[in-house]
Image 1: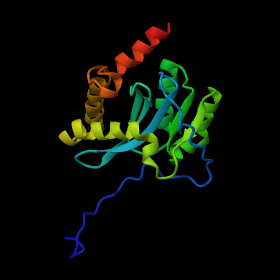
Image 2: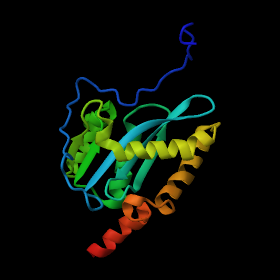
Image 3: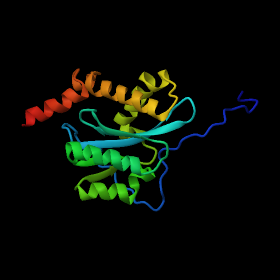
Image 4: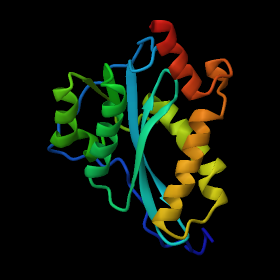
Length: 197
């Protein structure tokens, strides 16, 4: 196929396109020991393939416990669904000390960064093309896609939403993590809060 120049024709999603007019913030996590909930949150966007087309998924994750704090689906790469997810997480858990994202235009937009600044959150951004800077969310994408999405060909956005809600509930409440000494993200998050009280 390569020799003959045959390849699939499909729209390839670009979830991290940088806007040249938006400011980029430095990466604050290098060498930082992250050991408690709400110290660092991370957000990222991926695409979720469906039987026809795809949708975009954004998650807000607590780095220390790997807990997914909030998420949203959208059929466009607008800033709105990212802001909604961040507002929900902050409303439920209070603001983190540091919020880390990539340099995608949704996260560098003034609407998104102003929300974090208003809450006194330090903004951290991955280096350009440095997926390792947000490795925990990248691992989550792999888990979601191989354990849920690729096993189901969603027919609609509502079906994708139900499937992802089921999987993320399982991920937070049931799926143990070796890095958390066999605890689930929910258990690790709650255990720290109980010990801190």
